[in-house]
Image 1 (tube, one colour):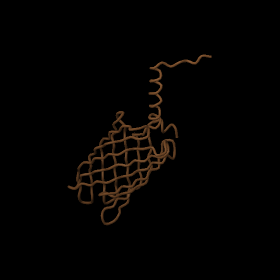
Image 2 (cartoon, one colour):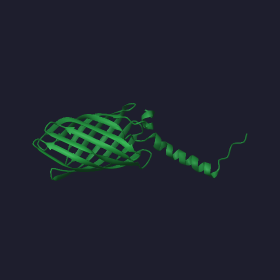
Image 3 (cartoon, one colour):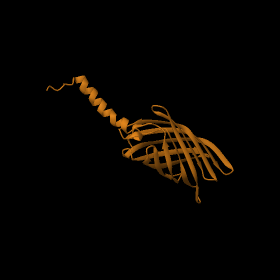
Image 4 (cartoon, one colour):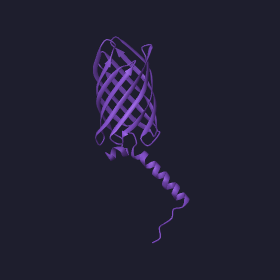
Length: 189
């Protein structure tokens, strides 16, 4: 029995397909809704409350993002855009800019925020790490912090989320993230 021979073009096409498949299978989801408990350090003590966030992928590499934090004496609203692109089949990098509105009791102010980080599948399809740097300019002062978020897949499109942020703006939180996107990583789990 004679085996078919692939042409030079056939080999290149097969190799390109093999390299692209893992990236498709492990795509990060940028269409989600999340919420949970958050604790924010206000200088003299910690205030607990809730945090709601959302992301909607509007173009292949661009998402609209929003986040609202409310601890009673402190509220913060962030809304903007996030550019994201894969570096490898398990790592994405992202850069974002946000409009910021903060309300601390009788004082409120608006400003802007910048962020940059990465999303990495530490255990593909099961555990994701999201380290990032966040900068916020509001109340005539700026705050730079490092944030680390971990996502553990607990159901097909549901993640348990834990977050720690340290620097000029200290906070931590726990919650859930529901992924609306139909990425292959969601179909695998």
